[in-house]
Amino acid sequence: MANNDDPSDDVTVLAADQSLLRKLGNINLDKVLSPEAIEKAEAVITDASDGLYVDCLKEADKLESVVDQFKSRALDVEHHLKKIISSSFSIKAKAGQSGYDLVSLLAKSLHVRCEEMLAEQVTPSALKIIAWHAQSIKQLLVLNVKGDGGKVGEAILAEIEKLKFAA
Image 1 (tube, helix red, strand yellow):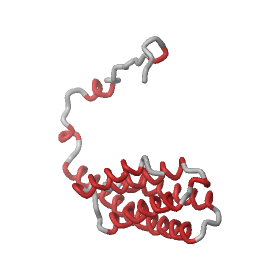
Image 2 (cartoon, one colour):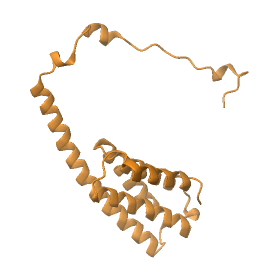
Image 3 (cartoon, one colour):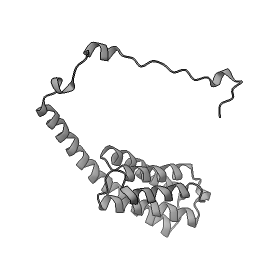
Image 4 (cartoon, one colour):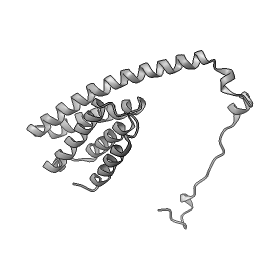
């Protein structure tokens, strides 16, 4: 919360740089980009999205495997946490770029939770939460749930909010 007596808490709002807009003038992008150019760009984006989806599925399999190893034997807790952090970060980025917003939010939740977790904090209940994240990510990808997931997505986000306060 800002301290009103502290001048270092002042916020300065800078005006947006309008130089590019002035150079372009009052122009409609439909006149600059042909319908063919737009179609080509959309095709490239769609192709990239498909590749990112496949990458997400592979990473979700990897994540699931690491979590299973983690649950079965807690040998090197820090090593397993690092693997989970890496996989969840990868899924977060790729899912977000390919339109799987709910998956990206779940992966972010897992990533942040594990990144803040110390080895001694990996309790059986923490492992259940980690496993829930991994299973949910995998299931949403398998079901090809794009966007925010509608009512199911709302319920999942409500559970994530509850998990923020769980041990």
